[in-house]
Length: 463
Image 1 (spheres, rainbow, N blue to C red):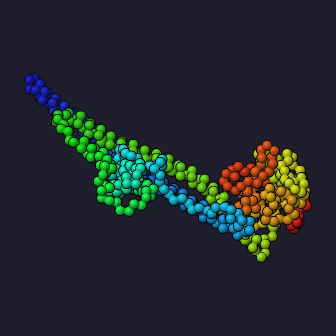
Image 2 (cartoon, rainbow, N blue to C red):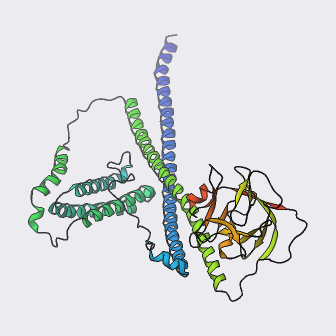
Image 3 (tube, rainbow, N blue to C red):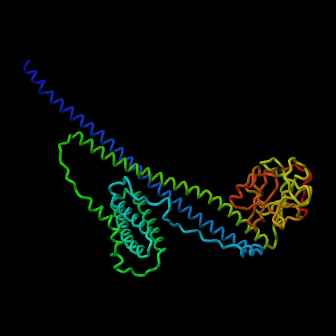
């Protein structure tokens, strides 16, 4: 019995040790699994941030391309307008088309690089510090009041720029997996360099900087903060204490997780900023696309009209059908009650509200009232009228959409050939011809073109 008790007492510490080792092993496995998950999340976040930055660059290139396209369309429209006598007079009293503004950065931009980069990976800390130093000196340069201060600070900024560029090159060479951060740092450095250039352009051309100008109190003030920060980084003696190994493992695990979570937070912040910028760019592209569409139509109309005018054999119109034009918002019908003006009447009349629709080249068409036998178009004074006896250039119309059940009407001769959308006054349902911009198109009223079954159809154009 005594031997059995001794064996039991001897095996109990051994079992406890095995249990402790098993518990420590399971705890380490849990820690490693959590750390692997955090590292995987960080890598996924880096790849997502990199793709987001690349998409942002593509959107910015598309925006730049859209601005160039608008400039070329405006210039082409002005050239085409100047080929007519009235357009030449209009060009004489208007300013020439200005080139699209170059992409630049101002000191008050909402997309400035951050003053401090929080929660960046350890491999990026040196580069982040170099960019921060450069950013701080650029802000000092922008705050300088005298030319001497600007020249002194510009020299310091050049030194900081060289250090930031060198650190960025080392980051690209030594840490290829941190490409997204390197791309962001490179973009921030480029933006800061343009800000520095902009600030220096506001300074007089002073020529060579004297050596004494970099040894005065300004240089001392600029470097005083950096030297004071460096002097405060003294090593403090830490007393070594006996720490529980389990607590030490927990502290080490928490430190690793905190670093990963901090980087994830930084990635999330950069992603949010990137998404906001992309949202603004997409909104700009949306409005820019509408402007390009309208200007393309305008240039096409002017080119077609110019070709038609100088052609030896003008295009002969062809009859399409009899139609009635209904204003969708009010339900009224377009009518010609006399041989002068057009009105919107509340009830449909089989004579005054019916128009013969004739098509010319492309999407151009003309409408001739069945009752008055007059063509609707623009008068010599630029107002809407129904008094022309022939289908001329002032009587050319174009539908805003291919769907004639809900479309806008555009008078092609308005605005020296640029076109003008038909609008309706709310107070008296009067008809006016507006402009051809996106804002005018959005304000233009919608009409429904309804084909009418008329027994007697004309076989040729009757003036």
